[in-house]
Structures are given as C-alpha cells and as structure tokens.
Length: 184
Image 1 (cartoon, one colour):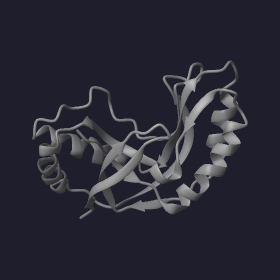
Image 2 (tube, one colour; image 1 turned 30 degrees about the vertical axis):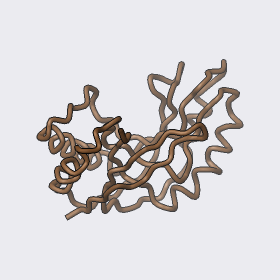
Image 3 (spheres, one colour; image 1 turned 90 degrees about the vertical axis):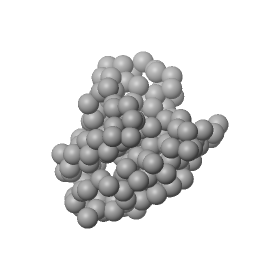
C-alpha cells in the first residue's frame, strides 16, 4: 500500500538555503539528527499513511473540491517537539501564512472526513521540519533554536497543495507527487 501525505512544497529560495542552514546547525550539536533534504522539504497539511490504492481516486476527487485562495507564506522562529529540553523534532515556524495554512488543513480534514478518512487527533500546528533527533546527545539546544530563528526567510506565494506518495528507503524518503490542487 502506498504511503501518502498532503502538503505544500516549498519555494526554490527555501530549498537552496536549507543545506547551508543545516550545515551550520549540525556544528552546534553532537546529537545524531536526520536532517531534512531540500528535494523533500515541505509543509505537511495531512498525513494519510499507508493507504489502499483503490482509495486514491476518491481521495483525489475529495481534494479537488477543496476551495482556497492563494496566500503568502514566510518562515520564521523555531522550536522543538515535544520541547526544547528533550527535542525529538527541530522545526521552523511560520511568521506569515500560518492561519491560512491552518484553514487549508482544516478544509482538507473536512473533505477527507466526508469520505471516511479519520480526522487528526492533535490540532494542526504549521511548521517546517528541519530535523528529527535519532540519538539525543547531552547539550544545549537553545543555541540551535536561536540560530534557526535568526535566519531571514523570504515570503512566497502558495498557489497549490500536493498529494504525495512517500517511499521510505535506508538513505531517506523520496516523495513523488500524485496530484496538485490549485487555489481558485
């Protein structure tokens, strides 16, 4: 069964800056971190997980009915899940477009709930994952988060969202777009 998710692809300006940003961050910690890769970096709106292939046309039809307007997104700020003392995920926040991204995620939830897709249990928190900590190391995470927060990210216009298939592999996931859904 294919592993699916719905998200917003990031602009080329973001993808070009990711590697230099991560190289700087990796020098600030001895932890083993699985850093995001530019070619797969995105903002997740809904994770579907393992999905019966026969459901994909119905999912596409439901997503095609989602109505949203283009909006500006700009990253800024940083944080960690579950918290900065014992992080499992280091993320970049949004200083612009967070409300619109949340509204879009809500519309996607509603459209998919109508075709019997379970709703998320946790509230949507728009963020861009920078890295997942595989093996924590003792250390001070605030300098890492401060370095992320200090970076200036340009605004870009979100004109569509994408249904992706994610294929897991030892060297990391690859994401194949299955369909794009444009703003109206």
